[in-house]
Structures are given as structure tokens and as C-alpha cells.
Length: 137
Length: 94
Image (tube, rainbow over all chains, first blue to last red; front, side, top):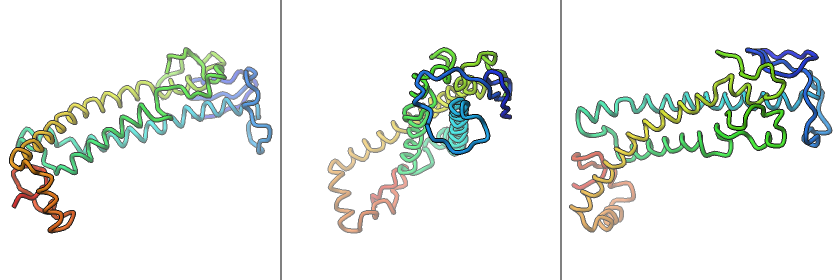
């Protein structure tokens, strides 16, 4: 994904993030008063923040996807073992650990403060940065 | 990335446009589906564990004191170092 800064509206176009003009903030206090030197215009800071947050959410989701794949792979033989022997083929402690890991996955995905379902609170005051219908994501 | 955002011509929607483009919602739903499948197995395993514990309590009504005696005699982890080999409980009944 590329990042380009031109004097048009800020938007996502295909694989390209275009940084341009943005509407004024509803709450200008959100923008820090003292900022370090940066390559892109200060006005695009919160737009970049919004894009970055979506990217970070996707990245965190990728990590969870990989972990769940590993977990499912580790459990892949269980149905076969049950069918063949009538026993899980692993110890009680190991089984309970597996159950705990599954509960952790569900918790990380849906219940944590930074979950993957809810829109971050930040965007309630700045719908411009959130965009779309509130039920979209 | 496989498709353009629905509102790519719209100047607003920075967060959601990228989240939609990265298919966060669909991927989250997919993960939830996988977890739901795994949870089906989980409930079956939980049932197995419950059955094993129930059977132990039938044979050893005073199960807690039985374990306490084992622990007192041989240390905390002794009872898990043997296995009755009739189930997967890792408990000792020699």
C-alpha cells in the first residue's frame, strides 16, 4: 500500500491512501498543540491516525488468525483419535489448557477493550474520520 | 487487497474505508466461525471430563481426602506422576 500527499480530498483509492484536504475537526482540541517535525502536513495527522488504526487492527487480526490456525492444527488429530480409540489421547491437564486457550481466543476477538468488532470511541466525536454507516464495521 | 472501498470517492470514512478494504469484518466473522466449531469439540471434551470425574467420585466417594492423603504422603505432584491407565485423567490409583 502506498501513501501519497496531493492537494485533493483525503481518501482511500484502491491500494492507495491519498492524503489531501480534510474537513475541519468537530473538536479541534483533539489535535496536539506541539508536534514533532513530520514529513506530511500537520492537518493530515488525524487522518493518518485513522488509517493507521485500521491497519493496526488488521495486523492484530492477522496475528490472531495465525495463532488460531496453529491451535486448530494442534487439535486436528483429536476427532480422529476419538473415532479410533474413544479417548482424546491427551492428559486431563493438557485438555483443560486447550479449553482455556480457546476461551482466550474468543475473549481476544470479541470482548477485550481493543476488540475487532466495535468502532473505537475516538470516532464518535469525529465521524469524518470514522466514516460510513455506524453499523458498517 | 482485493477490492476498492465502497466510499473511495467520499472524502470521509478513513477508518472504515481501510477496515472494509482489509476485510476486517469478514475475517473477524470467519475467526468466530472457526472458534464456534472448536467450541463444539470443547463442549464434548468438557462432557468427557465431567464423566471421568463423576466415575472417580463413584469409586472414591471421599475423593478429596483420598487425594489429600496422597499429597501428604508423597508431595503435591505425586498423584499426577502415575496414571491409572483406564482413562486420561493422569491420577494415580495404584
